[in-house]
Image 1 (cartoon, rainbow, N blue to C red):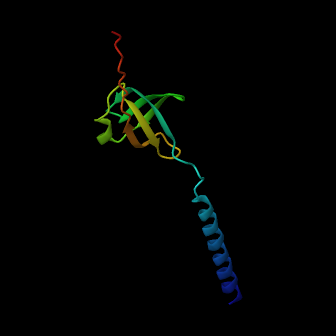
Image 2 (tube, rainbow, N blue to C red; image 1 turned 135 degrees about the vertical axis):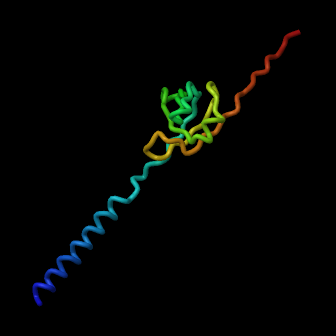
Image 3 (spheres, rainbow, N blue to C red; image 1 turned 90 degrees about the vertical axis):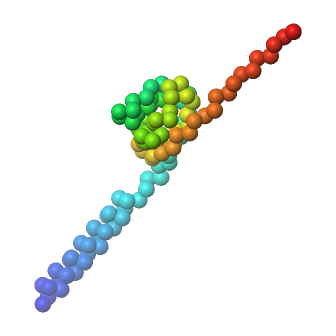
Length: 106
């Protein structure tokens, strides 16, 4: 009978510690989604990837949803939000190009 109680106590302790360890691993690390702006350099529809030249961070290859990639064009300015810790686009927003109006001198 004592062996059964000791075995039960060990089993309960083991389950409790295991649950505690897994709970620690599933906590978020506090990483935030990365947001950057840039110009589309190339588009690979087969791989659902776009290469974006960010204004400050250089070129990056981003995986984009197939329904979104079909509406994108090379040389478009975009604002991309990445899923935390990845190169997968969460959102892609086209940035309107500013048109410059030149004043004519008379």
